[in-house]
Image (cartoon, rainbow, N blue to C red; front, side, top):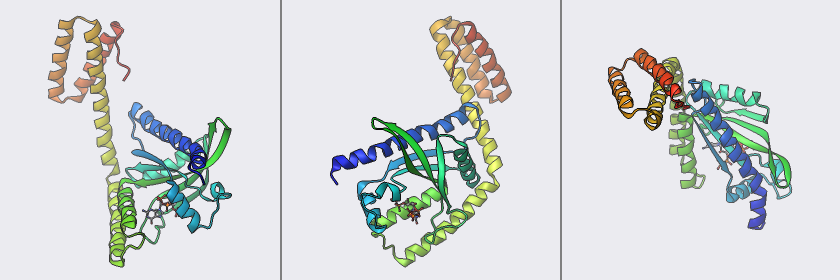
Length: 267
Ligand code: 0O2
């Protein structure tokens, strides 16, 4: 098929990937704005390369006429989570959404593939709008932990290195590494609450400091310079004392001062 026709065929898939990356990143942003923990750590997206599509077509005996019906991962989204529990939360979140419908799912976490591969796979149906009108298309969403992603990335690159014929002794090592990752993820889940508390405390403090700095910056533009300098020095003193309650009080007072000058930070 001519390259221009491939481009036309793949364009709606690229649009789906772009839109879904924005939407999943927005979930992260919404969680951070609320000061709550995001079950999504990172989002990646890609449209399958033409060469990989051709390989898969050959492997699955698919032709150009049934390509879009048979190959469901032309558009792919990967969602990386910190903990295994987050993966199932993300699946629930996707299931509750009205802009995509789950049409298939595979839990390679409960039952890993023979290779040792672990991930949760969803195929969702997603609608995009192009100049040609609305089009519903499948998107594969792979959801995995940071540790599972590390394993899959290394294993995937070994497939390239050995042209899909990974020597048996390396395959054995990969299985061992995959089992070690299960243990690592279980250990991380066991201290999940502790880690979440620490992360929440950190993000609350980081947001507060960011608000204070933005308020100070805005006040410099509209307020009395010497007065703002005095407030800034007070902030440095409180910051050095590392007393969260005092910092919260200071932030609140600064909000009132900034509001009075119409210079409140919206960050
Ligand atoms: P690429 O290069 O990542 O796009 P099916 O349609 O269910 O009969 P399919 O399409 O192979 O079979 O589905 P499956 O098994 O759910 O796998 C789809 C994708 O999951 C793969 O796409 C990989 O991205 C990933 N995957 C599956 N198994 C493995 C594995 O053993 N190791 C790694 N690293 N990734 C895996 P592609 O098209 O194979 O590859």
